[in-house]
Length: 248
Image 1 (cartoon, rainbow, N blue to C red):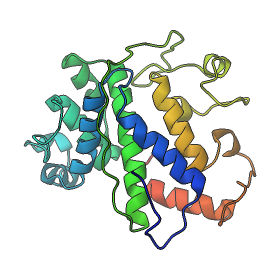
Image 2: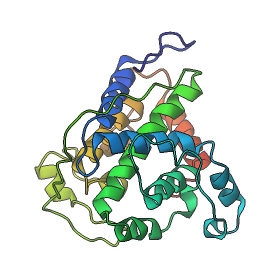
Image 3: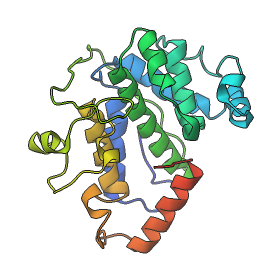
Image 4: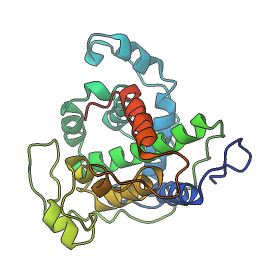
């Protein structure tokens, strides 16, 4: 359970609520992964932060120059392929050097590009919420128990290849189905997870509470009821992005 009452900080109710919804979603069957597999992926996110192989690769000229086994690869509650575990660890620890080969390796392993996108969505949820807890000195939340059920395995109909690693849902189609915000644009990063619409919805829900609507990013919008102003918000966001090797 996510609870920040024993910290030195007062956390807004909408932040806590969005994190609880996202955390609970980890334990439900996804679109392509079972609930047990989703929790196993989440466990690998945490394991990657203490992975000796990842540390060696981070220091190497090329991550492919260092071979070995990832820490935590034997601790998952559900079996994950080597390619899947490697993708999680690389996304978390070395995002600035990600290559399309990650997607290709998972597809060669019998999975799909949609499996990869759902995996990225899980990584984002755990990274964001764990990072928030560490920042305010709170304990990391225990993972919920996986629930029974099968993945929906529904691939969206309206997909286009815009030259990214995976296809995405165009803005017009996503807006008409309620997937995107009702505005006159959606940045590419907002469409990045749209191959798995539920991952997009979870990411948008977290963003509304922790940052602001995509449609307000390029305006002079001042989020209401925030203890810091827009300029301070952007300073924090920019610094965090730089520390996380974000090159977007």
